[in-house]
Image: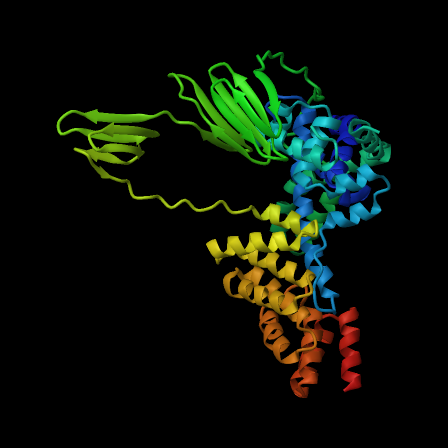
Length: 162
Length: 359
């Protein structure tokens, strides 16, 4: 248990930050919840960790999966609940990231919230965490090419060109 | 401010603090609880009466045991990266325009961007965005040219054909060849056969036009480009009328565009083609749009409530209201009372009571 506490102290900030960057709508509380679940799952599945890559990347892989699952559940619940109150004809489509966009205080935060989640993930992993394309591809379980393409599109959407 | 500076600013904005001591303790306690719960539960379930009480008391006072597979020693974290040297292929990029690449002619459309990955004999054109047209030169054995995009690869194949002397036959297996002879000057493609001047063409293969992915259409809708999204959805649904997610997106699009009838039509497609959960959602969505048309709302919500889910109270209130408008008072009262009985204290129950009092 001491080891778990030590790991959490060391990597908790990084995992929480990654979750919030990949899913701005989660907010600090949602990011914290996903972060805790990540460490608990890592601890439960420790026997499967083969020490092939850095521990941090293993944690990031778990965290991104948890964040995606949370987003899917949240979106499903939001999709039903929002419509429960609709009275007028024409049901608006509310992507959960629209709320994050509205809450953003800077241009870049609003643009990041507007990106598709897949592009946000590669920006967070490559540009913020400083991982290589290959490392990001390993975490996301996609090809290097797919990572490069998503990065290109994300930067274009953010107005950064190539 | 450059994009990199903005990203650094965003990284700073979204940086989270390290967990404090109480947060760390809380996590460790959760892990202990999860670990102890796994082996404590079978003991409690097997006992009855006093024995059960004794077991529960025993659990309460027993110190928590770590899970069986818990590590006995501290974990070494941040192992050093394995040193690995990869010879990176040469990379360059092609923007819009015509480019000569060796003997190949590459045309990149406006707003297109292609990265050339030259790995010796293998040349890869990675299409990042837009459109590229390739006029490929003939290649020697071992050389290849491919165009890649995400997980797709388009590879240039060579030309393979067979010529037989008697009767004179040309059979093309790959690529295109030109055959000239007495009264003949023709082009043969893969599958074509020329026998003694007579050409047997291969049956044309129907190539379905590529359909836009649903994620792309969703993004168009979020970007406010409803017409483009609608066109893409029409193509998808023409090719695949049972594409329930496409019908769902179309319904949302039409609802957003202020076309309730079109939205309801799309939701009805989801009802008839979707699975149980999809159909249930569609019934409720359509009923919300049709609010004010009780004759159409009633059958939808009646079917919805045959398999009630989380939205049953709201649906019950809507149905009760619609039945009241239609003058079906007894049914309305039964539905509204069912809401009050099943969900007391909720806003739906209060609304149901208000409707009953008003009647």
